[in-house]
Length: 252
Image (tube, rainbow, N blue to C red; front, side, top):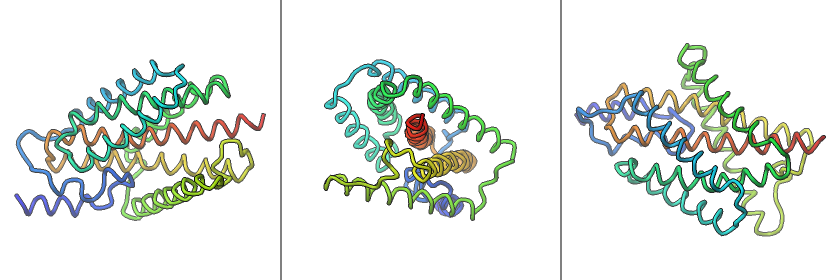
């Protein structure tokens, strides 16, 4: 059994650029007869998305900074707990989806108040990218080779560093201009387009990771964890599409 786990960990190395679906995801899991399946993960993902959209709907017209910050912090803490306590995923992932949905509802309202209809377009684009890449992955048109995985992983890390630097600079009243949604220069739009592409490619690696976990017989609770990883990528993709559309609309 230990040899099987070691083999599985090696095979899953760098399967996803998503930090919650890393090469060590399965290192502390126990294989059992009650195993993870792709269908189960799809169902858990659907439940999580329904919770996210549901809470987002109720907070869409609520402008309350305390609520947004509170839900954001709560979602972050819940995500950290999920990463380190994967066995708790059946409980923590629905909580995470609900908190993030509440936060996204407020953020979406603010974007929509600036550019009417932008939220609907962002949701449709996110879903279109999700299903298009899923079809391309299942049909074999996109194959996540090791070089592909390394490239996406490196690009994702680079983007994370840029955003972290911008976060630090914000405390000093500054920031990286190409990230600002009010910057509609070709360079800024090009940067957002690249980020959207990288976020989209992370979905391919997430599909591959989930499929491999099911093939290798991960525990049943990992269905929730796989849904969690996919949800993290989808939230990132949606926010980046909102940012890109806002920049494009500001040029009109």
